[in-house]
Length: 272
Image (cartoon, rainbow, N blue to C red):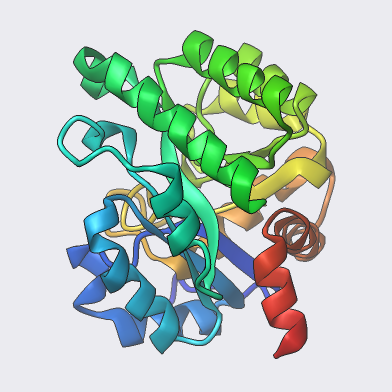
């Protein structure tokens, strides 16, 4: 084990990309290191529906790994538009536990805003239809994101997590008012992320998840290198104090939150 490795039992990496080339080529070792670090469960995310079978196969091959599927907003203009029926069909698989990631990204893809919004609304409807939580990617689109998410709830309530949350205070407040969850990534452990840490500090700990978004956004002391699920322990240890919790209690709290949001994964664990 690396000298930088730490162990924090009971963790869940609620968002990673195990099918990406940086990780899939080393997958057995990546999963083993995660388990050694105390990461009991992971959700690997399919970002293009044509790759759903590959992501599903990873979940089927590794105990404690679940998956979610959707069309990433940065791919929305390149991929065939998903349908509600298509997402509902995929959601019948016992290891498929979330809808997305979907959302809005105007930082890199503002020219496809209309397509992204149509895709987001389809994913919202699929979350409403299946009862699975919506997994949201948001960047530089806070106003439209808050509006569309709120409009969806008025039609029919649904569950949601703002994955890798790094948006502004207003969107965090909207998510909180809607009963949604915020997910902490390695960004919150970066030295210059004081404003983001303040947003998390004022959020209720019973609406917090923790993730890696690996292979991206590795927390210190791994920043600048490939991220992997084992490193969620570093993020958890770095941010637990925001809620006056020990890292161990933070791991327990976020795992309980995961079970409350990702109810299908919780049922699978209880049945195992």
